[in-house]
Amino acid sequence: MKCFELTCTAYLKRDISYSMAQDEKLKTLHKEIGFKHYTFDNFYPIQRDGIYKEGNIYQITFQSIII
Image (cartoon, rainbow, N blue to C red; front, side, top):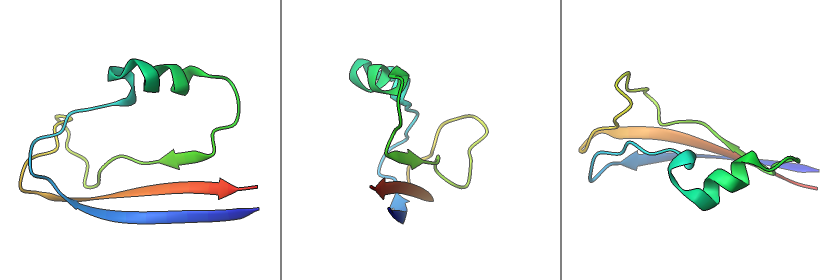
C-alpha cells in the first residue's frame, strides 16, 4: 500500500463558501458506506465565518492511498 499526500497553496480569485453537501452527486458519494480512498482538510488558516476571502492565500492538504 502506498500513501500520498499533496499540500497545495491557493490564491483565491473570489470568495469561497462551499461544502460537499451543496452538490447532490458529492453528497451521495459522501454518504456511501465503504472505504474512501481519499481525505482532505479544509483551507488553512480557518475563517471563523466560514467564508474564505478573495485575495487571500490558503493551504489545503489531500491524502490518498493505492492498494
